[in-house]
Image (cartoon, rainbow, N blue to C red; front, side, top):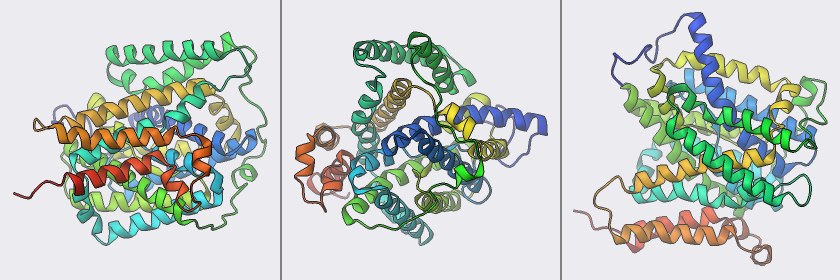
Length: 430
């Protein structure tokens, strides 16, 4: 981004009024992703509305803390931090292992990522992330989350509404795609939040029996600290599954930080990448300890900056503070989390469509794409899809140690693409 188009540089502090206004803008960008992914995971874990609200409160807090830590000690770039969608695949595949095992694995994964980053090993591991591997992982994240999206869309309040949900979902996804095509600037950047608001209102008008809020605790702090009783539980299979998920998370983090640095012409990028990935590892340790899905830097930050010209990292400080305040307000969290599952599912589908677009863009970024490259990407995608839709009987028949890995479509696809790229179709060095 040229200096002429940029209103504020990375380390410039805008006037208070402007800073608060831009912070509100970033909040509109950050909220939907936290709500969509948090709502999805909370529904997987709990049926009790109070427990779901408690989960969302802790998630808001971890995302806010991670964002503020990145701004002042990590990469120090203006980036939105949100829940890592890749963990949803690992969580869904490991539900039978229990919450303690799942979040202990996220904690251990955070420790490993932190150690790899601070010791300098991450730079060497980057050699594994070829164009085909990155493209496949981006697409794998989207396709292996499909079963969860389908369950959300067809989570009907009463039998006989399946066809209505199907039609509503089709109309809404195409409406979002049309809006994405024609909207510009901040309206395009905040498309998801307007979709959540407007489509939820329409849904409630059409389905008046839907209950928006129920079971919200009146106390603030007692509800937040509920469930903070971490209990370590180790399962090798679940850990391996999440380590593979952390591989994808590190690719996402690396790509986002590098893209922001290139856009803004930031200096000392090697140090920024190392510090940024280290903070991501540390905050995933915190997420595992608290018992929520871990954070990652979001690449959509580059689009917001490009459209607004606001590059100051300090504009995200009010956003982080606002998220912390929200985390201690269960009534507000419950209201935000009351969005119908159908709407969450469609918005999630839209986000994953953009993920596939990013993967395809990466795959075809080079003019040297050949048939073998197509196989390297296609075979892992097919295997990942097959595993994602395996019958429950097939999953339960697997050995307990291997079930979290072989029953996880993303894990199977990721291992396959690494084998295809670096073993079967390994290219000779020039």
